[in-house]
Amino acid sequence: MLMLNVIIGITSMGIGAGLALYFYVQSLKRTKSTVSELVQNAQKEADEIVRESRLEAKDEAIRIKNRAEDESRNKMRDVRELEKKLVKREFYLERKMEIADKKAEEQDKRDTELRKHQSALAHKESEIQQIIEQQTERLERIAGMTRKEAQDILMENLMENAKSGISKKVKEMRDTAISEATREAKKIIVAAIQRSAADHTAETTVSVVNLPNDNMKGRIIGREGRNIRHFESLTGVEIIVDDTPEAVVLSGFDPVRREVARLALEKLVLDGRIHPSRIEEMIKKATIEVDESILHAAEEAIDEVNLPPFQPELMKILGKLKYRTSYGQNVLKHSVEVAWLSGLMAAELGLNGEIAKRAGLLHDIGKAIDRNVTGTHALIGVELAKKFKENEIVVNAIGSHHEEIESIHPISVIVAAADQISGSRRGARGDTLESYIQRLEKLEEIANNFEGVSKTYAIQAGREVRVIVENDVVNDIEADNLADEIATKIQTDLNYPGQIKVVVVREHRSVSYAK
Image 1 (spheres, rainbow, N blue to C red):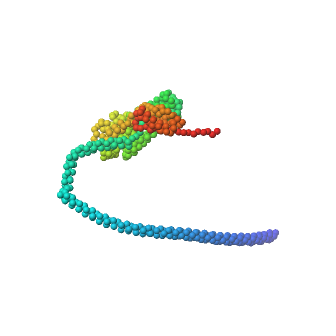
Image 2: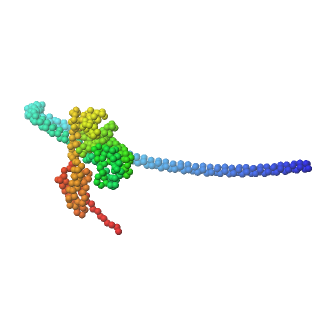
Image 3: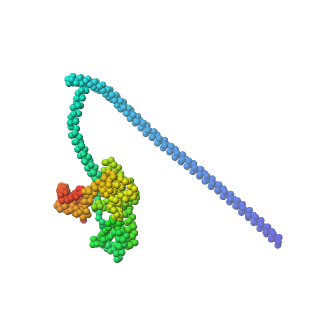
């Protein structure tokens, strides 16, 4: 039994070894087949790569050849064009050479003729000189004196005649000089006024704020008046709520505060939310805007008269004059005008124009703070100028322009004169607000009284009247005559500064309707 089991085990091992060998041989065959296939595939890929490389090389060679042929053709074309240009240049050069040769020949001819003329002229001059000498000798023989003696006698007679009339001539020259000086002085003043003329508007101590509706007045007043009291306490400006439709009035003597109040109230009305905290916020914003406006106004004034920048604090004070008026005249515009007048007159007299303009611009600087400081605006201005270390000529001009201190320099006198010219010229301070409105109404009334006038508008602050006429009543020729008649009527019935332009407008409209 044991032997049988051994035999069976050995047999099984032999069979197993045989099977293992068989499978190993089969695996080797399959591996060899796979390797052969891989080699074949690799060979095929290598052949494909070589074939594609050869095709790409041929394509690249063809492209290079084509580029070379194109470049060659382009170069040949450029060469041919260059040859054409060279041929043309040679042709033009030949033409120019021919023209130059002809001009040279003509110039040679002119030179030859000129030399001949010069020779003939010299010969004639010699003959004339000989004739003059002969005539002079004959005159000396006839007069019995030499040329020198005749000249001395003639000079003596001229001197006696000159002495007899010299006193009269001197008097005439003195009178003429005085007259010319007066005329030139008037021209200087007139030119200065003309070149520095500025528009001035009448301003009052009140500002009007328009409202979208009358219900807004109740919101401005607030519950038991808390809004209006808070607003007035913060701005120092009184709000007048009356029967004026859709408007309230702001009243205050400080123009800067009144402007802050106006801007703040307009912002509140536009926003619609009116309560104490919102009022404080809008007043702060308005204050910032007004401060920026003040600084901008000062910068514009300084630039307008071509002066270098001032110290920042002085510019803030100067800019406040934008909101100050004197007899209806804006003080900042007045100061700019005085600066121009002073600079022009100083330049005509050979003085320092820049110092004159600076003194003119600052002469009313005291008006910016005279409501808060005791004293006249001239003396307040002197203290301000000294504080900012201005030139002593500028300080003296500020203090002396109303003769409160003595003038020590011609520029001070010029500034005082310019201040008088600017303030007293016609139109500067002549109109109050009431008379200004009345004049505009009278202008429109005069034009409306003419036949054929349908509407009249006084515009440009009363410097122009725009008259609309009826097309079927007034023709083109009559329109021209109507303009002259209205202008004549205005000259007869009104007193006004400057001139008023009358414009008659006649319009024809053709209207049809598509139904």
